[in-house]
Image 1 (cartoon, helix red, strand yellow):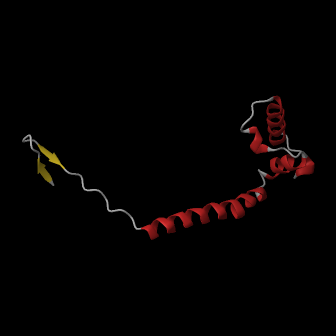
Image 2 (spheres, one colour):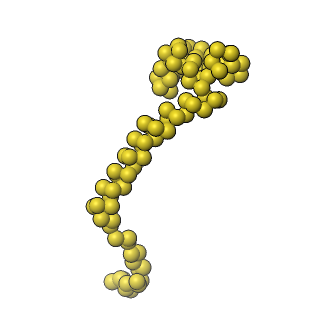
Image 3 (cartoon, helix red, strand yellow):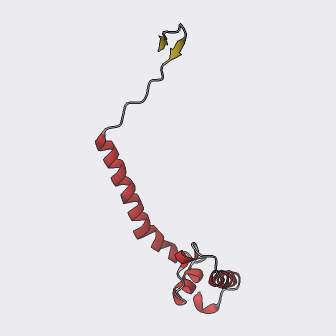
Length: 97
């Protein structure tokens, strides 16, 4: 739609999408929450059954490594833990298989 302005020039009005209904937004929020819950409760634990990840996850559990804390720190423990996990993945021991 073209509109004539008071100074004689023309301006094009951009029609906006109508707002989505409140119900649709609540459904989207509930669906997103359900997705993340299913991901955390079912999919993530299933990953430990994958053969290539099992030795690493077993090592993390055996030595009680707080893997989420390493994201926020840059300390020597991270370096040592990272090195041990890389060594385990390169040379897996017979006991973790």
